[in-house]
Length: 236
Length: 236
Image (cartoon, rainbow over all chains, first blue to last red; front, side, top):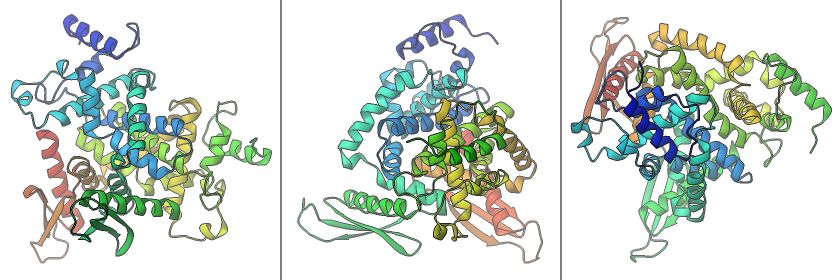
């Protein structure tokens, strides 16, 4: 079915916003589908493209990390990638381009403000899927996505608290054992703000893999996860 | 560092076995690295390429499913992909090409027969990473990987028991809520072999998402997971 000329013009505007030249070989029908919410059509919507896009964002971020930080450990890669591919970050990037203005969605679904982040992230992944499938390369993706990921990766590396070792560890234990790591917390100091206030241990299959301290419960768990992750990567 | 001519010849044999022409633009140093186990070198081994390859196998399988089964639901895609990217399947394909003969590994690590499947799957992913990075496309991957995935996907679709809805559901709940689904089993019939012997319910965040019956505990859980997955995909 031919695309409505007004819709096509709208999509061309978006593609120009991404910094892509007007003559690029975009599959416009796919891009239209990528920006159609299931509330508009139960059959012809962004779900399948989101499935492909989930893999696209993974390969784009992996390739970028491999090229940019050739001396980093796989643990660091995994920790950074888990942040880059998160709904929160993808929705943030989507907002830079005002993606919500191009998304066809029913009024009732649009009114669901709680679901906004995941809706935007899903549509964004679908757009990446459509652009990837237009050429079967990352040519239409990396030129504009790389600068976002580069800046974010640099920020994440500078701020250890943003390095999500908990997510990275969880992803690993899931993939290898189909279980989640078990965190055990103790309050080791009662002084509020003490950098060693909490101690966390992370256990897997009856073994303590890591221990860490922190000002907050979350920080202690991240420290424990970081140690565990390092151990696993050296052991593997 | 230039590659040892004997090693290069060995790698060329492998590439020919994959059905790729001799003159293809392979990055031989990367392929060499992809087939170097961490037990040989703690720094220069397949780990980083495996990280990239994990994303490559995901995009290759997603693209194939999208092209081959355009009318399938995302739930079915996810269930099939979770089998295709599993260590068990990747190690099986690796064995077709005798990948273990090309893998540089210390004697002590090679003696670990329990770890063989994951070692082979890891090296195989790394090879996919190296081939992908040689051209930044799937040109050196899909020509020989597609037939394996096509046959496996067809088998998985024909045999519902191989459709891993439990894994697919788990992947989804992990990604969205960072929790695992909770299965509750009851033995509803005491007759051995009764197709409705077990009833499983799957719960998430205090809600029962699906129920299923089966001859075995596993079959009942898969049936419950399938219902839950269908519900989630329609709701999303």
